[in-house]
Length: 349
Image (cartoon, rainbow, N blue to C red; front, side):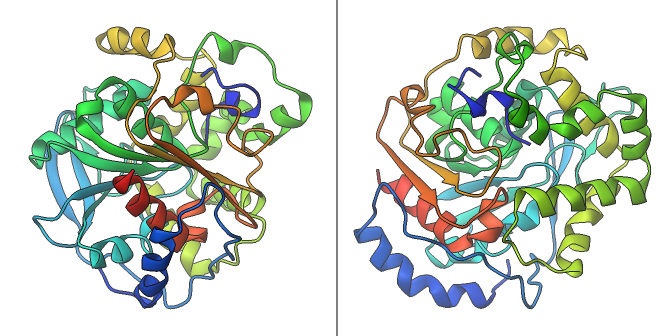
C-alpha cells in the first residue's frame, strides 16, 4: 500500500463495455478541472480480460505484461499496487487504446507471470529496485519515453522515474501524490488512527505474518479484507477478486511483499547496488514533468486534508490535482473513466 507519510506533510486488449464511455472523455478533456466531478464506483460486470499476455526479459526479470492499442501509438505504462495486479487497469486500457495509445500493463516483481531470471537473486522489493525494473522493461521494449500512471506501489514507482529520470517520463498520473519513501521520516510514529490503518504492515514484520503470506488461503483472506476496508463502496464480486488473487500464486510473492513493507520500516536491509539511487531519493527530489495527481475521497490512506495540498510543493512542473468523490483506494478499477481521462489530460499539460 502507499507510503506512511502521506497522512501528514509529505516526506517521503481487450475491448469492453467501458469503451462506450469514450464520448464523455472528449467533453471532459476540454473542460478539465482541478477537482473532478463525483465519480460513481464501477461494479465489474462481464469480467473483461486482457487476453493473451506477453513476456520479455528485462534486467533481473522475465516480465509478464498486457498490451493494448496500436503498436506505434504513444506509450502509457500503467503500474499496479498491493494487493492488486494488472486487472486494476482492465477497464482503463481499452479506453486509452481507443484513443490511440499503446498501453503496457506489467506485473510487478513477485506478481503474476513475472519471474526472476536467477534463483540466486535476492528477492528485494525496495523502491529503487522496482523502479529500475520498469526502466529495464522500457529498454527491453525500446520505449524511450512514456506517460507513467499508477497507484499504490505503482505511484511510488512512477514518481521515482519521473523524479530521477524525467527524460523517460513524458507525463505522470500519480494516485495519492508524492509517495517516494523517506526511510528516516518513516521511523517517526504517526497518529494512532493513521497507524491503525497500517495494521498489516506490522503484521508482516512478524513471523506470524510471514507464515500467513506463505499460506494461500490466509494471504487471500488478508488481501480480501484489505480490499473491503480500503474501498468501502466498491461493489466487486468473488470472480473479480479471484481473477486478481491468481497473481498472488507467484512463487516469490510472499518474499517480495514482506520485504517491501519491512524495508520501509527499516526492519530489512536493501542491497548495496541500489545505494546510490536511494541516496538521491532520500533527498526528496522534486518532480518537474507534467503531472496530474488524484486523491480518492474514501481511501483511508489519502493525505489529509484530501485536496493535494500535503504534497503540492513536490511537483514543480505543469500540474493539476483532482479529488474523486465516493471512490476508494483501488482508484483505476473503481473509477476507470476518470483515471483514463487523467492520463489523456496529463499528456496534454
